[in-house]
Length: 176
Image 1 (cartoon, rainbow, N blue to C red):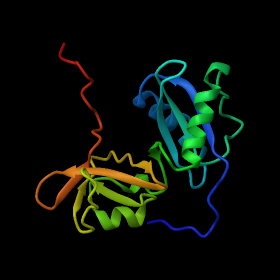
Image 2: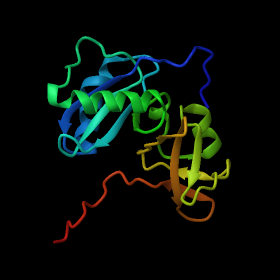
Image 3: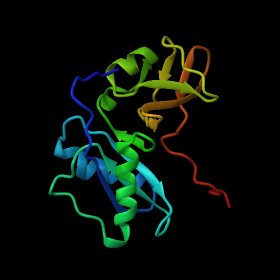
């Protein structure tokens, strides 16, 4: 687990640019936000319903001047995403300290040591064994839960687990 003696950042930024999917929002984060090199950045996606279903984004840092403000009708979802992130209540982390180290197969204890992830929890709520191997599939998206960044995982064979979220999920009703 990455530890830091500095106080938790209290100013967060939210963006609601009308992204229709998590993939669209992640693309924006990788193309626009990641190159800014913001220190200690945690960037999350949030599903929102109003004024229409879309994905908002939150950052753990104040918004740099180069990022666009939300359209007036999306200011509410942007503020909600920022508040949820600040309270560490919800948000699906895409960019976070150590995320680039989580490739291939790593032990649970090492994953926690090198990244901002606080816990790895198996479906059903049980903490993962620290020596279990995590097949990351190079796609690790923890979520804020009760103040902690938690990776939800599923069994993937003897002594192995994998993040529950798939990198390229089949869209609902894709075969209809």
